[in-house]
Image (cartoon, helix red, strand yellow):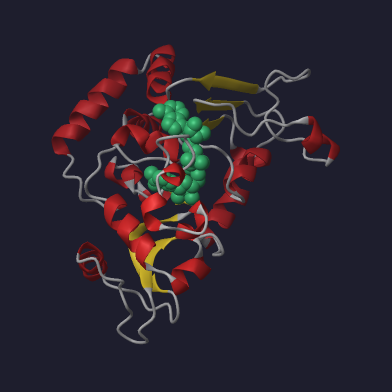
Length: 273
Ligand code: CNA
């Protein structure tokens, strides 16, 4: 399970890191509240801020990080069941992680549809509109057309739910990397692995921990770091790219990771989204 933290080293800000995260840097958009920029009802009335941001974040200008290549390495070693990602930057695809190994839980910029009549839009056309500072309008009904990233108020892709029930019971080690685990239903995925499955959090803050209040409300499957009876949850807190290098070294795969990155950086034309 991955989140915005794994792309910070690529130059894409995450949402919630104080100071550098997107939510602390949206003043110029004059929003009623930070999350409005990704709310479907707000988009309908005030689409401009989202499209200004979309231009800044548009895939093509960013390169995958060591963490993206580590996930690719897990695939090459035959141990990656799936990468469930919340990211919309498509850097997993740029790192050549095969599409069937990915669940882009919050969609991506790879396709676009009208929010009214759902007509599919041409990828190059919508990119052109966004880069010309226009709000893209549907050629059939004139509705706002946006990349297929999932907004608050929209459902997640069918693939997320199908593979969630298929993959999580099979998982024998869950890696949770670079996410604040604040957004549902993605955050609850950590509850869906078996009770003996080890879970490793790699992040620069502790997230998803079960607190007393949650236990009283019956939610007992959050992480149990530093709690009595924790037999399977492990945390590595610190810069995640360094943590990934540490993990690769412990596995004896550091040279393989370096070799993969060298190979991919030579051949990567950065245009596979
Ligand atoms: P988030 O809520 O911003 O959390 C990011 C987490 O990563 C936080 O816990 C940070 O502490 C941690 N983090 C950031 N940098 C590092 C670092 N260098 N080392 C270790 N940990 C670090 O982001 P989530 O993904 O949890 O939130 C879900 C939202 C964010 C999804 O809907 C995404 O679509 C959305 N988002 C995606 C991108 C992207 O595609 N790159 C960018 C910004 C937001």
